[in-house]
Image (tube, rainbow, N blue to C red; front, side):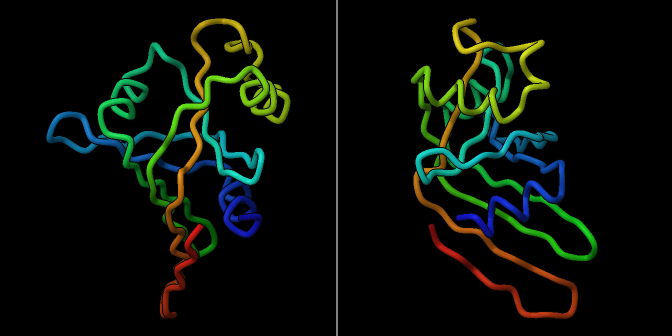
Length: 130
């Protein structure tokens, strides 16, 4: 888990892909954390991405840096607990201007299993299941 977390965080920005009806949707994200040994992301309930995840929780993210990239795919599960939101916001204090644990908007999701595929140009990819 730490290898996946560290790679994505080192990239700074990753791109999250969801499905909207029958169309793909991709957008940049920055929140990616480990809490209770699960990989988490954060968004707001008012965003389209939130509704897309609720309708189809199967997502994939991709991050790239220095000729190497990772794709992480799996099913996201909403964690509505105060503690999970607090952990995310504590680790990303820049979000506190837009979100809080009790604002009715903050959502955190964890990957319920999945796989991470590490790739590099000219080399074999490596898959890690979690």
